[in-house]
Image (cartoon, rainbow, N blue to C red):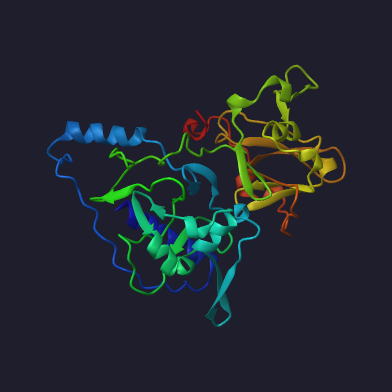
Amino acid sequence: MRNVHVFLLGLALCACAQKRSQPVARTASPAAASVPSSAPGPSDPAAAQAEAESKEKRPRLGEAAVYVDGKSVGVLRRQELPAKLPTHVLKLGEGYETTRYSLTEYITALGVDGKKVRAAHLYGGSRVVVVDRAELTRIGSEIMFSFVQGERGKPRIHFPPKKLNVNTTIDMLSGMAFYVDKEPPTLKDGELFMPDGTSATGKVPYAPEEQGSGTRVYVDGALVGTVKRKKLTNDLAVPAANESDPTKFSLVAYAAKLGVDAKGAKSIDLIAGDDVVAHLAPEKAKGVTFQVPSRNRGQALVDVPQGEGSATRAARVSAVQIFVKTTAPSRAVVPLDDASEAAPSAAGGRGGDDEP
């Protein structure tokens, strides 16, 4: 039932973004997930409660996270896609069009040799589509993904209208995992298992830690780290004007701690959800400060420069993109008042959104 709700939500979002709904390619019929015989039934409320609590404690993939051999390499947000990823504009007729991205081209844009990928796992909630090497070679370039509101919103997957050699299909994407050097988990009775036989359900295989909700830091399109409140040390702190002011940290200094010479960057873009809220030249970025308050989804609250003066305005930033060797793509900067996800969380928000 949950997948049906997600599917209906995707359709509703598409309807808001376009006057005409996009055609959906015919795909292989989804395989019904097997239910282990030991699964508790309605007649066993205690076991059902225990199972529910167990599921709640399982780690989550995060915000449409993407992994290669267990290493976090980004998320599926339009503004966080590699700049060199080609776009495919499909004409829908009567002046309507849509933009899609090829799965194999995305793999290449991540810096991965597509010929070496042993398997791709496409997550759609609790379901996983297993695409093995043979199928990636055969139709990988025809498996496309897009965003439900054109360049905004959640990602969805599109399979080609031909016979598919996969276990199931999904519509909305909650994450991706690619396997190159690591042995891919195998699917048995609807559940993923690691090569040693242990269950991989509810976790990211081979990941030392899962991509959380902290602000992501990219250098030339490659993810190099995530801002974590517990990793902010005193040497990164900026002297406060007043003792009552919260402790703030230097953005450039934090980047240096990640091994990035942000002082020599061509430019730095600040991203809030689907919007670019600042495009900073290196000299402007030197004085940018941030904090990671509680009740802010674990993300950095950055003092975004306003105009040519010294005025700043706090904004919740989901990603920082630093361009050192490459040039930033040409993107419109959205005013903070128009970027809904840049608004700091109100005090007393959901504590579960913070990093642990």
